[in-house]
Image 1 (cartoon, rainbow, N blue to C red):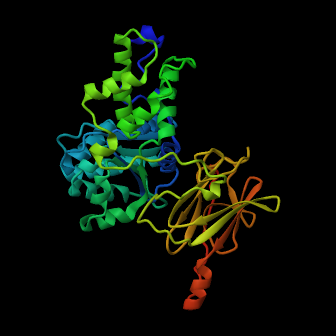
Image 2 (image 1 turned 45 degrees about the vertical axis):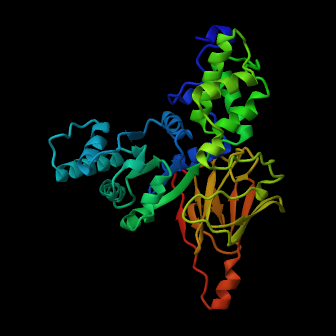
Image 3 (image 1 turned 90 degrees about the horizontal axis):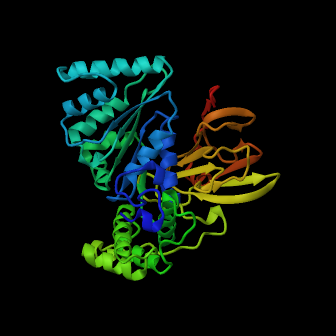
Length: 423
């Protein structure tokens, strides 16, 4: 192979999912943050969709590898199964041998297992990949499983990952009850042109490039033109081009190697063969408040319903409009609102906006959040509420108050959920 020529330790563009090589674009970081939120909230489950090769499986493997030891995981990848086979697969993941059990016994065994894990202080997570292949009957079983609970809370956390057809299934009339249990939907898009370049450089560095420019600068626009930023396609093209350079005994991949690889793969331009426009390079906005809010659940809604102001020492740092969807607040750059403070966790809290209300929830942050000097885990926001996170304040302004007053209906009262000791 070409490792010696390029002085690499490992193959940089394997097609098999490998968490060691994962490149977290902002979009991938957000999806990972939403998966992490399932560990702390059990009222509903998360749906992650993306095109074939967009990196869903690698992201799942990375997420699972970072879980604490108190999380018990069942990971289902074979999804063209009956309802009975699905329940059996889940129990096998939990260490049972359920193949002679009837459905009632399967459900009873699973219910008892979940209650026992809860009593032992362990969290249970079910991850289903390729979930678009699940039948309507199996998806209904998933809904029923998500309802298993103790007297205090649900006991099974669920992540469904799949291709975009999964959203079509969830939106069907037969699964309306299941759709109502979805806490969050997030669509994993392909990489931008700049992210594609960084993705390639990142994987080469992990493989041992040590700063060497193994791909010449003029290769990156061509790679993006023929792959559309889809990670799996990028891997295929880059690996084929490196083989071409190896055959020519060249330690750098050139533009002609990319074009020769495209011809060998019999590819046309990505936009031509998928009928999709490529994502242009969009300059980073000057402030977080100017970033477009990605669709994170439900149907798109461009109406501004409220505003959240991030303040420090009496001055406003960010003023972000809130639309239907979800806004993540935290220390790192992949958040919607970035708070540069050591008192704020990587993903500190989230604000969920619906046409009726806005709710702020702590994402198991270290220092928590307070409303009126009271630490809370979940708070339904009312106009004028101030939520303290570290040394910063989040002030909520509800644009619906005036409209509600005109209609003659008083605004809904806020409800708090006190923070637990674990925060």
